[in-house]
Image 1 (cartoon, rainbow over the protein chains, first blue to last red):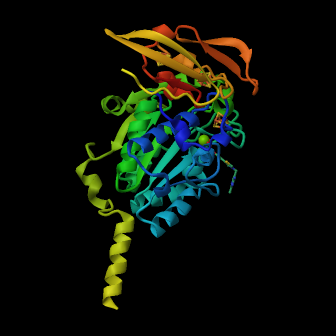
Image 2 (tube, rainbow over the protein chains, first blue to last red; image 1 turned 30 degrees about the vertical axis):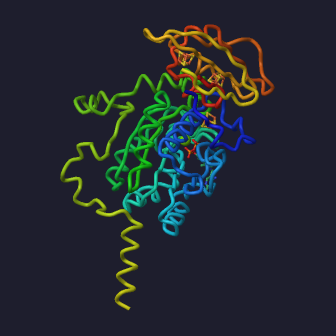
Image 3 (cartoon, each protein chain N blue to C red; image 1 turned 135 degrees about the horizontal axis):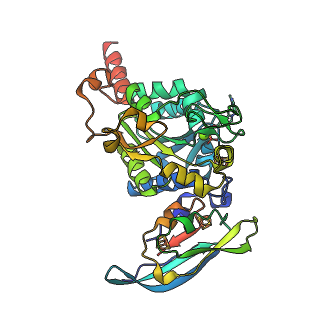
Amino acid sequence: MAFDYEKYLRMEKIPHLWCPGCGIGVVLKSMLRAIDNLDWHRDDTAFVSGIGCTSRAPGYIDCNTLHTTHGRGLTFATGIKMAKPDKNVVIFSGDGDATAIGGNHFIHACRRNIDMTLIIVNNNIYGMTGGQHSPTTPIGFKASTTIYGNIDPSFDICLLARAAGATYVARSTVNNGRTLEKYIQKGLANKGFSVIEAVSNCHTQFGRKNNMSDPISSRKWIKDREIPLAKARSMKADDLKNMVITGEFISEESDMERWENYNRALEEYTKAYGDLIKKVKKKK
Amino acid sequence: MSEKIKLPDGFRSWEADVKIGKKEDKVTIGHWADGCKGCLICVDVCPKKVWKPIEAKNKYNGQLVTVVKADACIKCMLCEIHCPDFCIKIF
Ligand SMILES: Cc1ncc(C[n+]2csc(CCOP(=O)(O)OP(=O)(O)O)c2C)c(N)n1
Ligand code: SF4
Ligand code: SF4
Ligand code: SF4
Ligand SMILES: [Mg+2]
């Protein structure tokens, strides 16, 4: 049965500004279905973003939305959540927005385990500003700032989030809209900080420089590199170079190593903060 | 089975009787030509070759697609889910 996206959109702004075939639309749609599955009410939910092609997403949602400054979406979102802990807060961010200029905000939001969901659209490039390389541009690939091929190793966004303390972490790609929907839904439902990485195509800026300038070949390039986490576990590191490992890196069911728990937040952040306020007030 | 079919304004539609596995069913495929950007993802993801590119363009100069085999549709929803532009509805 067709999904009623119109219910959640500012239709006067559609068609959106993204290039034909840009994966961000697929991620936005997956998120709207996830929200609908959970029956979240629009007045109880805020969508926040920084700057970039990805960060334009909240502007299309007919809801409480905030388009802020580059890399700082998480800080505005944290403010909203601290002031209104009973509301839902979702942040949309690009790979540049979340892991370059906003990298510090990213790891500290994970560390606090504050009950928000961060969706990172990783298209391996600064799409909006003309295709500069980002912290996730694979080695050997071209960008307008790495014209002879990139030599900087990439961040693994999911492993970074996991190490920093996020309590739900998953990765899928724009080839798998249903899986994205499922992971985003689990992230939204998690009472703590959730990170969903959606690997996406920017054929316009990244593809063009790397011999895949149309959406179909860029999507295929992603598909051909997808490896489920369970399979990756039994593979050699050398064979996993530049691959896209998909799956849930941390979830209630996932087999997180025991010792990895030693430094993890025990409580959701706004709850810990509320408890602290009560304690201090009692003393006075 | 009668599902309520509500296509937004501007959607063209194709209807057909389909067989999904052994089950008889009906499909209505909706396409919003004015929103379509001609990315051809629908053509690429459809396992039954229901969609086809055509020469015509819309008002944004986007190349258009059309439904050529509605009766082959298995209602897998792949085209609806992966159209980045909210242009496809499968009922
Ligand atoms: C403080 C600041 N520095 C730089 C910029 C320019 N800028 C705008 S978007 C962007 C990068 C966007 O990349 P990403 O977050 O990956 O988003 P995408 O466009 O790829 O979705 C940059 C560097 C800015 N707007 N503000
Ligand atoms: S430049 Fe890249 S990320 Fe931006 S809309 Fe175009 S394809 Fe999408
Ligand atoms: S996927 Fe959507 S926008 Fe792309 S060609 Fe098909 S209907 Fe048009
Ligand atoms: S629902 Fe599936 S079979 Fe039917 S047109 Fe879409 S992709 Fe093709
Ligand atoms: Mg990017």
